[in-house]
Length: 439
Figure (cartoon, rainbow, N blue to C red):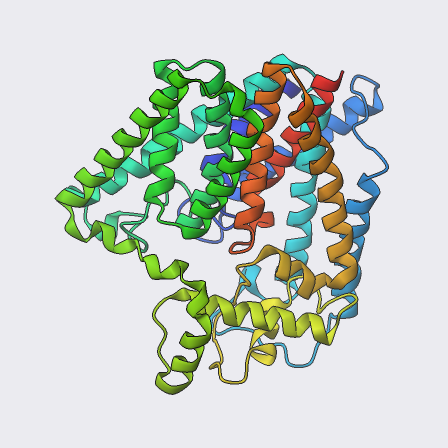
């Protein structure tokens, strides 16, 4: 029962919990309630089996760091419960209301961390790990096909805007997420698992899998996800270069050509399609010039400048309270107080769009140090083992998850990645895979 429920939970992830605030019909009923309800049951069953001695304990001394981080999150919220200058955005209620929102974030964090320990407890063999990796890729393909089909139906005018859940961001592909950049971030995980399968068995099936996942990732038009995937690809190539035979390179080139033809066909039918690709978003070296121009014109060309303001506000919060920060979840409510002086006030709940600055601003240097050290102690040793092992099977199964997680971390400089459960699933796979192959 425990194992089957675990497989169902993994399979449902792209449909229920890519985005933290996914809804089934309309708020306040969220997809995540179902998904995290399953996780809660899994956690209870796992603890029961640990108590009965049917499972080996996955805990180690390094996990005291993440426990310390959770305690810091709670402490810093309590210390900043009543803060001057906090503003409740207009028309914001429910899980975005001050204090309700903060407590919900801590509960969400604890639930996500429990994902890592559930995976470490249950996945105790190579067979289990391989099954999970297969489930992740299959469910990702279904989520991608849904998004691709919806975009095509819209392009062909089969369905109008008002019937399309993706309409707000069209033509950017959202798949089963609420935002394209979130779906792009999620796709980094199954894509590099699929690439590991491709190197292991370069069949037509694995080639099609990589093609679908890569196509969907491109169609998200998320610059941050692309950069994350690039970082993951460089790492993956460095680890597995010996397995890239001429045949593998030929298949990858064919996949690339097919991808280009597919996107070109879409752009030919819908000429405005490529307008979503704004190359200037990558020109970060122009940011000083754009800030100067904005102060004069009060107009900015894209969201790069907008995110610069968010980052500066986070830095200002950290400088004001460097040890324990301004409190978990308080960033959005304090943005207008700490934003640059020349920036107009915002009347909505602002996000940092930078996972690391968010942790630094809300939990200070103590929280940031605890959390970062916990991540590094779990990633670096496993990355080293993946590099040193001579076993192809072990190297590929480890490197797919490791490289994906590194890519997701790279994207974290432009997205709040730790709110998304797939980030934690990737981390759990890294630790579990290492333990399995070490044994």
